[in-house]
Length: 338
Image (cartoon, rainbow, N blue to C red):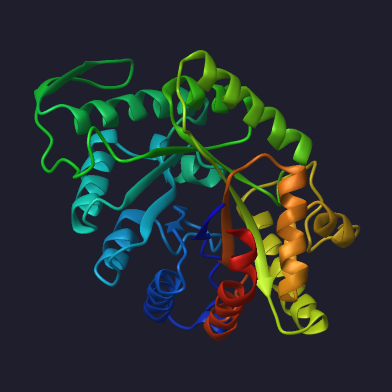
C-alpha cells in the first residue's frame, strides 16, 4: 500500500508561530516526508477561516516544496474549482508541474465551507455545474496546444495556454468526495478519488467508492486509486500519544465547527463524542507504533481504499511533535504496510 502525507492547515498562532514560520515548518515536513520514503505530500485549499485558510493556494506551496525536494509527488487536496476561473487554475498548476519536474498530483473538489461562496459572491447552487465544466476546460487546456470551449459558464475560441504541464496528456487527477453522484462522475471520467475518515462513516464512504468503481469499470478505466485520509499520531507510549492526539483532535474539530456546520455529526469539542468508536473503526488513529498499525488495519477493514493518506499535521500540533510522530511512523509503522 502506498502512503502519502497530507495537511489541512489548522493553524494556531500561539502554537505554530507566525505565518511565515508556519510555512517553513510545512516545507520542512515535506522534506522530511521525502527523506522517510513517503510517496506523496498534499496541501488543502481553504479561505477566510482558521480551518485551513492559511493555505489559500496549494499551487504556491507545491512550487515551494518542489524546490526543496526531488522525488516525492506533490498534490492539491483540493483545488476548489468553483471559486476560480478554470484557466487561472490551469496556469497555476501547470507552473507547479513544470517547477516540480512533473511531480504534480492534481486534486479537485467542490469545497465544504459556505463562507467561501458568500465572501466571493458566488452562487453555491451552481457549484457542481461550475466544477464539472471547469474540470473539463482545464483538461482541454492542458491536453491541447490550441483549444476552444462553448459551455454554460465559459466560452472562448482559439486559446493557447502558456505554460502547459510536463505530464502528458495531463497530470493525474483526483476527485475528493463521498457522494455517489460525485464519485460516479469521477469514475466515468477515469479519475482517481480521495475520501476522508473522520467526517464520514464507513457505510457512507464505501457506498460512494462502490459507485466510483462501478462507473470506472463500465467506462473501461483500469488502474485507478482511492486515497483515504486519516488523522494519525504516533507516540512512544499510549498515554502520551492519547493525550496529545485527543487534544489536537479537539482543537481541530473546534475550528472546523466554526468553518461549517455538521448537524448530524458530533464533534470532539462537544459532549457525547465517541472516542472509542472513532478508534475502533479507524477514523482516528493514535498510540504506539503497534497501535497505529492496528488502527490502519481497522481502517482498511472498514473503508475501501488502496492509498493511505496520513494526516500528521492537524489541530495545532507543534512542529517538533509532528516530526517525532513522522519519524516513528517511518521507522516502526511504514514497514508493516509494505
